Length: 248
Length: 248
Image (cartoon, rainbow over all chains, first blue to last red; front, side):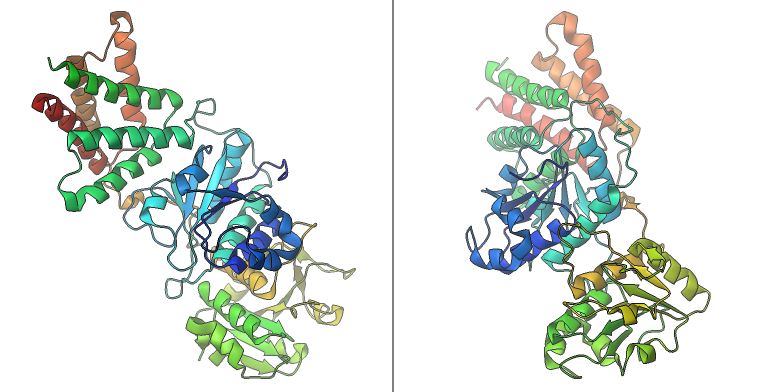
């Protein structure tokens, strides 16, 4: 079992080298973090190179949860942040690592589950991955040399997590009692809209369809949706379909 | 020549592996630091493994100054800080990386030269090295797993240097670039949905209709909508109506 200490889950998305997974585990455990999720590591799992590199932080790997895709990896989370060097045109709040871990600490203290996504070594996260996040974490590196590797990005985020543990008040300012939707609920909402809009011929013309889908998903994940909002938005769509089917 | 940008000098004391010197150079240059001093690197200097690892940060190595001992390395400095995991009974101020780089920034702004000492990979700095420093920098790691390597320690210190420059706002809402919808546009969106959902028979039963309308309006007004979001949401609704009217 991972520790009971409240903390964010760090999600390594399609990591390539086992050594880097091990180095990320070490970086996490340096700052007391031991909840890792792995989305389809390239070389399979378990991975002996990861274990060799992790050495004293092997427990992080022992407890790592293997996931089939990013959606599954964040399904039970209320708030998701994506580390990326470039915002790439997606409209989302961009947080410094410091601010991001303050937000994470506040939300976790309020009982939410928080996940942080880290992309594969070379390419980083795809836009489609980032579109599933509520906010972006951007490390303020030298623009002439932005070359943080996976474990370094994990390290800086973990360091800020640890720093955020000092003097954080548990209550959140806005809507502390709101019943926020979990990520799986937002995902299902996005799917519901995507499916019905597909039927309705919304994603047209063909060469724009993928971009339109990404924009729509990005919008849902960026919205501060409560459970009630999600239910209402399902209801809106269902009613439109019923209306169509009535044909009145 | 190293850059003119005021900055501390990072002093690697008796580093062992060339790869780690290269990784430290990369870590420095990520945060715009390019003044390295090397105290008797174990495998001599220059070192091809260091160069290979540094890749894009090779200029940091090209300009690195080779020193015969720690005393020589800090001879021209006004203020010296030593990174170490343990204070080991030396009576000296112990600073967090954040505080240390604030102090460094203040002193450098006042015209002083500041150096930061980093110890060799395994053993860290000797007491004799630490005794030459004015203060100790201690990274707040997990006491059960204090395993930062050389480049990671350089990375965190460089990161705090960059943060101390003040250019980094805790939350950069990239939404300066976002084209937010005006209130009138959100209002028209709410009306559009309300009208169409009225036609579709959404507000039912009658005694709940007013509450449902209010909830829906409240949701739209609470969402951080851009102009593009508003247009997309109009498009979603229009397409559902077209679908209904096609009756396919």
